[in-house]
Length: 67
Image (cartoon, rainbow, N blue to C red; front, side, top):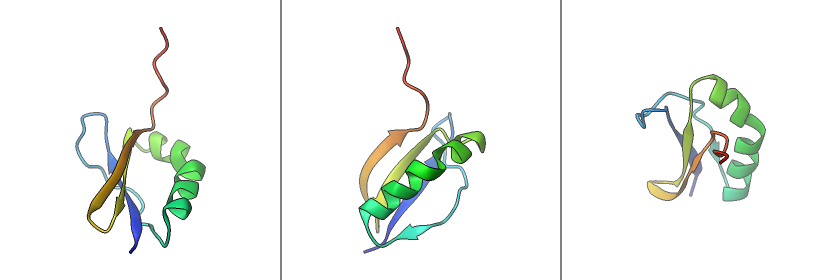
């Protein structure tokens, strides 16, 4: 089952991004750890990890708000 990322902009709407697929969750997570800065520079504010059509989790790429 291939793993992939879906990309969203600040408005929550889908945005285009690399259409990479991975053979494991660990490979997908390693890749996002290496490329998140480039994705945010391209307008991606959050990503969703998907295995086939099943959503594993959604994650913000924005810095955590400080109080």
